[in-house]
Image 1: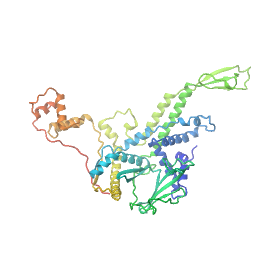
Image 2: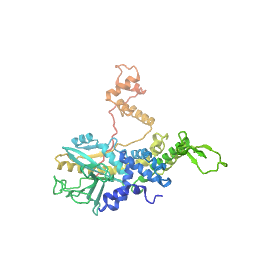
Image 3: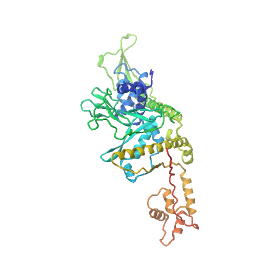
Image 4: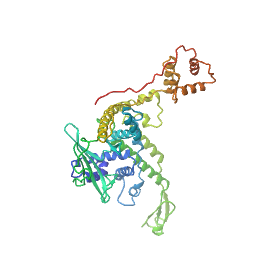
Length: 495
């Protein structure tokens, strides 16, 4: 029986080795929680191994693990590492960076496009949503702006009484012999050693595993060239506190673990319900006796006069489909506790249009809250980017604003009727009507496509008559007027 959270059992020892003797050694459990949550978000080999270790720790309370022949130990490498449920929910909660509209220096905007800045920020948003926070750092390399993102199981920081960061630590590991960085800093082996980057407003130091300063050839005085800590942190709350975060993400990770555990039990039932075993009673043949694809078990020391030689095939009752249905039902019921839209909970959900919009209202409220936090975060990050670039010789103007495109859900039929009414009254042109109906291209291309699709219209027909015929609205007196384009509202918030 587990006496502490499974993530503490699996990861505490690694993080204790990393942070023991530091001011952060009491934060090991928080680091273990973040690593566990991130293992369901990431798909690296180390993350997959972590998910398997978490499931093994969950299962071993109900299985024997005393012998290498015990099924759980024997098939540990085959344990399910699925994370699709967890990732699907996170993707649905973090959709702000599909088509944001960002006002910034044209050169900076071009650079954002080159490095996939929206993708970077979407990842930061997802990590912060899961774990409560994520750090990002702008830097200049070979005359070009780039960004590092830092997962919250790799850094710690200290703050002053007002909550401002005054010391930022990044942990990593290097090979003792080559001194090359090892990607996973919690995968400690004998030939690895811990290293730490420590940033303050005035200093940048590199420490060894004993927290002694390692001399820097290019920076012997350990000076921070920026004069400020060049990290910005997106904070969205505590991952295990309902009051600070909309969903308890460890509960969500536990639900994914439960689903994986049920998969293991179901697959085990299928195997033993299909193959079975042979039971041989009072059968000679030594230890090499085998029969078919199943193992034979021998019952010895029985009285032959009472029990003649017998061979029986024993098969467990296969409950594969029942177990699969039970798993699906359990997962759906537990997901309802998270206040998620039914379209996320059930793939067979048939809601559309206005009904779907009502169903997703709680999700839209969460989105609106994240939007206000992310706007303030992006403004801080933009200022830090401008300051870092100016010190490294790249000067951008500080113009900046950000807006996020609303993810409106409407009924397609109602949309068409509404746009047809606007066209009939002359508020939008034929090309705009086509564009709102999903057509792409220039105004002339859209107009020509609609007219050609309508039928044989000759070039002598006037534009108004042709458009009337195209939509079946002959007799309209109002002329077609310029396009009215609905753009997302720009806001000018200040922090």
